[in-house]
Structure formats: C-alpha cells, structure tokens
Image 1 (spheres, rainbow, N blue to C red):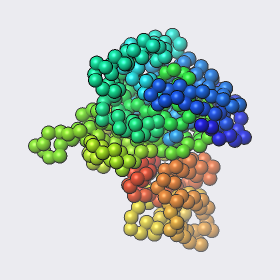
Image 2 (image 1 turned 180 degrees about the vertical axis):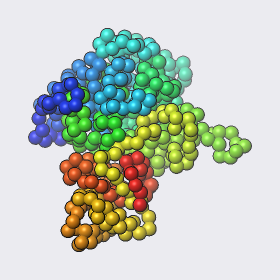
Image 3 (image 1 turned 180 degrees about the horizontal axis):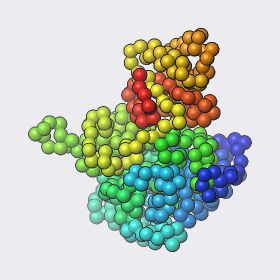
Image 4 (image 1 turned 60 degrees about the vertical axis):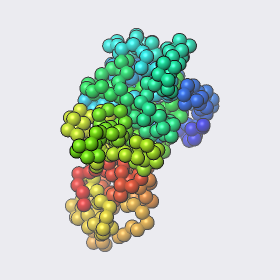
Length: 446
C-alpha cells in the first residue's frame, strides 16, 4: 500500500501555547506492505520513511505522536506507560475521567496483553511493562498463546467469542470493542475507573505501521484540543496542538471522517431482557456510533441481530456517570461559532432557509452546510446585501460524515463564520454517526 504523495515536506513549527517544538514529518509516498492480521509485521520502502524511526523513538520514550487513522487523526502514546498516557490528557486538556481507546497492530499484540505483568508506575524506556512487551516477538510468548488455545479448546480465548465474527469482518477498521482490562493497562487509560478497556485495530497503513514498529499498543484519542472538532488533516492537528506535542505524522486526509463505532458485547450492558419476567440475553450494544453502521453489525447475524444503540434504545445512569468509552460524557466536536442543526424531516429546506434568514439579520458571516441536490435559495436578496453567506454542499449522509469536521473547522477558522447552519440527515446507515456528532456539536436545533 502506498500513501499518495503530495508536495508536502517535513517541517518544524514554532511552539504555540506549549513549550515543545512540533515537527511534522510526511509519510506521503511511503510504500508499506503488511503481514497477516494475526501476527502483524510490515516492510517499508520509498523516500519518506524517517517518520517510522522518529515515531518509534517518541512512543517508546514516553512521548505523544499525532498519527493518521482511517477515521480521524489520533494522539498516540504508549498505552503501557501511565505517565505517557497522562501526557495525552495534558496536551489535549482532556478531562481525566474520559477514557481512551487502545490501538493494536495485530491480534497477537492484543492477546499478548493478557499475559504480561501488571501495569508499572515507571516511565519511558525504564517501564518494566514496556520492556516485557518485547515478549510479543518471542517464541516463549507464542507457546503461551498456543497453550491458551489448546487448554480452552477454542481460538483467541482471551477475546469473548461474540466478537470473533465482528473482528473477522471489520478489523483492521473503524470498529472498537469493549474487553476486560488486561492487568498491564494502567488505570489512567480507563479514565480512573472501571474494569473494561476499549480496543481497536486501525486500518490506516501509517497508524498500523507506527504501532507495529514501536512494539507497544497505543492509547489514542482524537488529536485535537478537547471539545474541538476532530482533526481529519495534519494541519488541523498543528492548529490545535502545536507546541504541545513533539511529532505529527502527515498521512493525508482521513478516509472515513468520523470516529470508530464502539460496541460492547461483553459487560452487563450487553445483556437485556425482552420482557420484565424474561432472563437477560446477549444483545450487544453500540455505545458510540461511528464508521461501522448498525445495519452492517446486524448483518453479522446471531446476537448482533439484536444490537441496541445507547440513548436510542436504552439508557444507563452508571454509563452516564462512569463512561466506558470516549465520546459519551462531555460536549465534543464544537467550533467557536454556534452550530444550528436543521433536523431531517418535513419542510427541511424551508426550515433551513428560515434559520439562515434569521441568523443573517444579526451576523456578518453565516456558514451553511447543505445535504443533497434539493438545495434551495437560503437567503433573499435583502439579506445578501448585509450578510456574507458561505455555502458548502455534500451529496448525502456519507459525504457529510467524511467532510463534517473539516467543514466545521473551515467555516470557523478560515471563513470566520459567526454562526453555522448544518442540515441534518436520517439515522439510517452513516446518518446515525453523523447526527451523534452534530448533536454534540450543536448549540441549537431547528
């Protein structure tokens, strides 16, 4: 796989609000070839390979690196190093009780975590848990994994069986699964609470190679300042985090545009009763909609046909107080300008026009995101004379998912919109994830 080349080159940025000099290294044009999903491994060739050694050095030394994934850019740090994980929270100014997703580069890496020593409190290359992660490449660890399969009589015994079909279908890719916490994962990854950890195997070749090269799993939330729209370009990362992190790897635009879908098929949240007097049955739940649709999960069959969506199909006071995955507790994805969402349904075009007309009377610049070909006049001639309207159009829910964060940033940062109007979409397919993000970003609904 080749990362498409552009004219971008490595650059050094002046420190912003932080004290670090942030380097940007290009991965564009790097050719990457991968081994199996089971065992990992990769080879790299091409002119731009400096980022691989630089990333490995930062991650194994306890630093933070912004990496592209197929969903959004992530801010990665060694998930076995508590101090490195705390550095993620510091760089983003993220609430410490907001848990992180751990990313792996093979099934073997994920399984091995359940056979390592408990989390240590030391840092960087002195971290005993990090050094024990060298066991990922040893014959002794492979024998231990083989013995676990033989003694249990099943494949991947560390991973609940309900996930196996989803892993085979969607990994590597934009699906995150909730698993029991391995002893080697520090409590900081969990937001200081709970007994489960969310794991993902990213598909983006740069993220996959970076994790594999470092030899450790990485905790990686979106690489933005907390609360801001998620970054889908390297320049979005530097806008928010220049001076706060040491390295950004530029892999071009992200393909999906919204974060991964988070599913729980393991904890008590994954069991529900069809009736008050019925015994609970396994009914996996979507805790955060994202790059894998509910319909795609249902197509797996079995228990996944009963998949439920948090806040749409059920609620939980415990999840609200102590979320098991990011994106559930705090307001997210918000530009500086207030966002007005015009929900899908009857007379959406008219409601859009009325909302923009009203905002144009009180603002100098209004940004508008329209969905589909059925676009209408959004301002009358009188409003046009006193207000600049910047209009962007996307084809459908998938186009909105791909472009939403980038458009919010462009309207906010480049176009200087004082208010932003976005047409909503239905919940089918990609729409559920889009509306989840829009609802969190929105100040008003129409």
